[in-house]
Length: 535
Image (tube, rainbow, N blue to C red; front, side, top):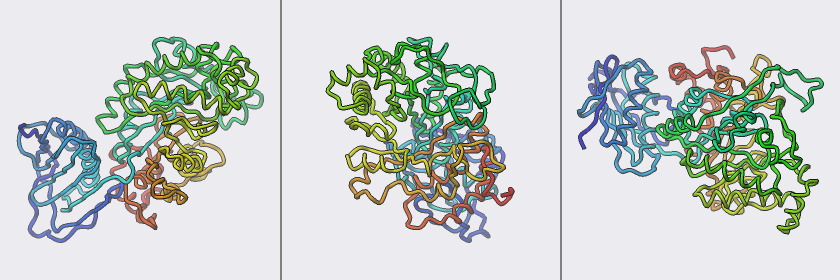
């Protein structure tokens, strides 16, 4: 097909190396750090116009995004149909995330066998452009990710975030080469996605009467302070489709999480018959773990959840669905005649095996719909579902056990990957999860593959993700502050090649170098590590 091009007007690039400037330039700061960078003599200098060409309809979509990014750094543009000085070449159409980026005196070229690779190539290019406004250094980059799963999570149940912020969250994560957004959509404190067959989920489950203020120490009103304001909302299915499409254009897959059997108080508030006691229930106004969960003995529970997933599955085309499985107290099950009958009828040993039955039954249903389930590491208790992926959060033990059982694993241990923890202070810091701290340096020290695993077992470690629980995070600005720059540290752990001794000071220096870029993309990042800000 004819080359498709984008004309970049105003301050832009053109292939004209100044004869006097042929020395090798310093290695530009790129985060995450590429696999291989070879610096070459000379520069690719700025002039008034440059074109970006795309060799296919798929690469043209990436060119449009590059155009948008350039606009964001004050370079106007329009699309024209001619060869370009920046060339985006899709060599085939696979799911490859690898790319080659070359800057020479003839121009810029990015080559990949997949649109994802082209996309990651332009992320590296934009960082180079942002920090070299007068001339780009000539270089050759060959790059590919270490891990296939590079995730970021956001809890929208404790506190709700706008569609526009969700898009921004996805856009920012994609700029640092994360490829998976784990969207936590249901909780005790709110149900956040439209299910048309069950309207009470939106009428009752999506709202709570008020919200506890500060660090709550119990579920009781006594001794706690509440704001007295009704709180809630949900995402309409059309909004979800819009967000999923936005993410896909940025090479991000969204994994929805529908919690079961625990963290289900909002659903029980809407449909009390799904609980063991029959209610009444109320959407939680405090934090923590609650005893009322889905009844595992009633067929109506499974019918409800299957109906919910029948509406969820068409909205999310990715491979995975997250079913939670964590923090499910068994108190109600122990005294529920329906649950006890289920234990007897299914020849189960105890309530832990009943939870395994619950998860395995839902897994079988979701497998029949072409989905693979992910669950928190509690799903190991009582027997692991046959094809389940384990998300190891209570340290690494669950992930190690699952990998040794030949199950795939996503690492997200609290000590390194929970970004609702304080990153400094806590004096002078916004409210965060009490008593815990995860610094940027600690994140940067993390190694996702435990030493206890053999080389074969280590292949089951798909990658890792950061988790952002929002009990104490009330706004998008606050969320960004908690996430960045810690997420950038994690992105380098997941993307860049493993090294025996990571150079944290080198990372901090490169982080400072891309500070202007962080400002340009409007991230409300924590400034502790930046020279231009007070520590």
